[in-house]
Image (cartoon, rainbow, N blue to C red; front, side):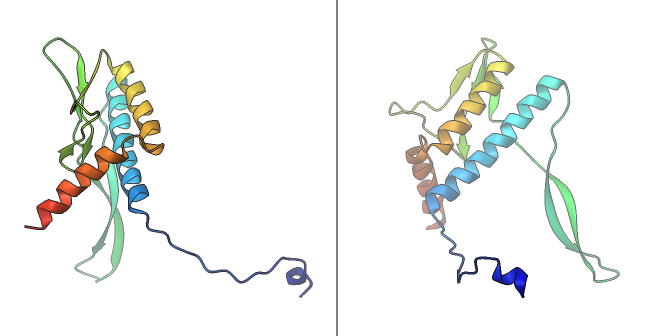
Length: 147
């Protein structure tokens, strides 16, 4: 009992706040992280294989197991005719508009620049600079379900 008396005991309840803006930011940050890992793997001359955990039931024993399976990561970047890389940021299947003039791509010269642009985009998303574009893309997704 002396150990508990030395501790500060309080009554507390965990509050789960579901802020849709922060959820959308986290989703986009995860996807940007996948793109950055994809670029870094390509720079190193290897393939990037993203994985996720999946629960499966063994048909013979009926036991549930968690296994790791690969998931497909589509590249958001490509090389144009001039030899420069173009990068589009996607939210779901929608391409985000990056400014008021509806620019949808970022042009960079090399893979090194592409990696640094992806890092700076992660910072921009975390600071909320793309919240309006994410909200617009999210409303498009929601509208497609309301048919």
